[in-house]
Image (cartoon, rainbow, N blue to C red; front, side, top):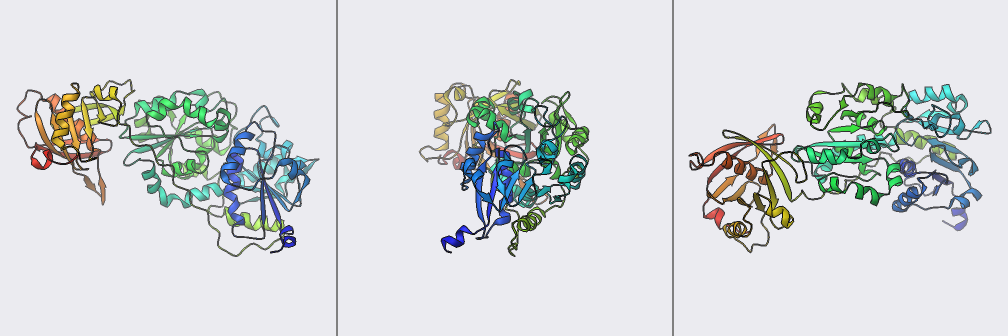
Length: 551
């Protein structure tokens, strides 16, 4: 292709003011995929306090950037924007298209635009010199078209319902749900996504201690908690500063997915969400996730009668962490997807419909290649489990239930458990149960256990976890045991518990039966419940196979 031909290529400028808008445009960009005729540029529209974060997000994307002042001097074949605010009218384009930057138009901010109206439907932003700025409004649902028709009829005359490209990506990625859960280290646990929008009425602003409270008071074998933070909030606080503010919760196991794509992978993987009034909850509802509302009484941003307002009106209310497990089990929104249906139309058609409309504006015939949403990427792998935990144990005869928590929990516990060689020295000294997995092979299991019991006088049990099913457990008073931790098989699935939790169960049983004949009556079987899984442990006297195993 000659330089002259290259200069004649139709040019598309993707203009945005925030990372939220950029992320939406990146979800739409595949409509031009594989077409060498299109010249693509990005520019940041000034005037937003979230502009710096938008620049950082743009840099991470690797997109080709044009300075806004240069963009004002150029004329493009198509200007594509997600959101109508800012100096868009100073850009010159043969055609202009406007998309929502989220799930509908549910909030109004009193400091900008017309009172009570969302910016995406506000004539103050949609009209320029009394005429619609955009040649195309790509809307997500007919409900939005009806509202736009009421508020700005001239803009509605140029509107088309195309659906939601981000939700289409999420729907198509549901087949990778188990992969996402594996990456997040969820296993058999309930993955709870805590959703917080931005601003003074957000969950994180109103209840900044809630992420830590959830992380410290929900059993780690029952739950994983992920905090999904609105990109504008990350931009306002700064990602490093936010991580520092959340450091205790992150150390206790809180997941903090990135604001582009990874949040959507987490929602696909999640079982339930705890949300404020942010519209991200509509995506979770569309996927059928259990929904719980963190109280939004007295807020002014949520517009009555919108899909988000109707959804929150029927959602069960979160009151405290102690009652959350029962709330998630019993208080369900009947068919949450039916409420989200008022926000998302034309399922799985967003990209084909947008391609047809945008190429019509450019004046080109669209490529004939099939067009499908790109699957969401894997989340960043979760950090390894905490090497030290606080353990609650209930012993009823030969039935033991174990719940484990981060060591910083304020809940009463039975004992502490720590991984030898991985936990800090203070955590190892305070642990009644120390355990280790096979490593260098420099120890025999019995030799290592004797060393640990001699080195750390507070330790009552040293356990070598030889495999997922086989352990050597050496009690300071009762001597060595062989412990088998078989899986529980049901409905074609294999359910396992962490053998370190099984060791804590045996220790609690030994404490409860101290001095009784039961301890000496080996072999013995114990029903051990950890999280949602119950397995039958087999405890017997240790033999050479366990004592001489290499660690």
